[in-house]
Image (tube, rainbow, N blue to C red):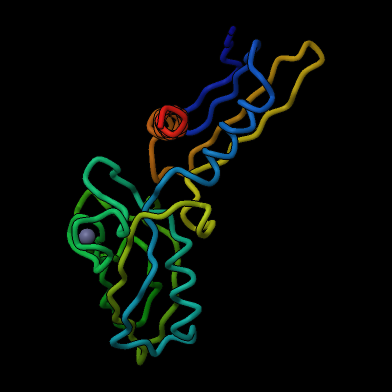
Length: 202
Ligand SMILES: [Zn+2]
């Protein structure tokens, strides 16, 4: 197997790899887009919302907001010791309490874990006038792109060249840093092989 980096930045990489099978290339692509866990908001409790956006629309916008993810500290809710009830090991609470006038930005969210914050501070969530206010608690949890694209950690695609090699492209949406996204993809891939091996042995 031969690998050449064509282009690399902080959040994307393009490389050519030869000696790789099409099915392996596709497995890697699918893992990156649908199986790497990231944090996203999945439930919101509104105490006040007099903005022109109704609760459902504002929740949807919050859900699509990328959130910095720490895979070493957090479990998925299903795998957590709380058995899916939600605790400090599997969920993070982000709260907003803002009175108008002004723009409610993602950066105004207060979080229970300073490491788990929106990737971008300047995502406008709503605009509010002097009489309006927004107050809510949002719960972020780990999930994968398989369940909903809001948990998708990045993009991956490839093109097969005439010589049989692949030009690969991987980009992170910055919930995870690029090396961590790629590491996670290979860990998931290895785990699948280990599970298969164990299954066959049995
Ligand atoms: Zn838990």
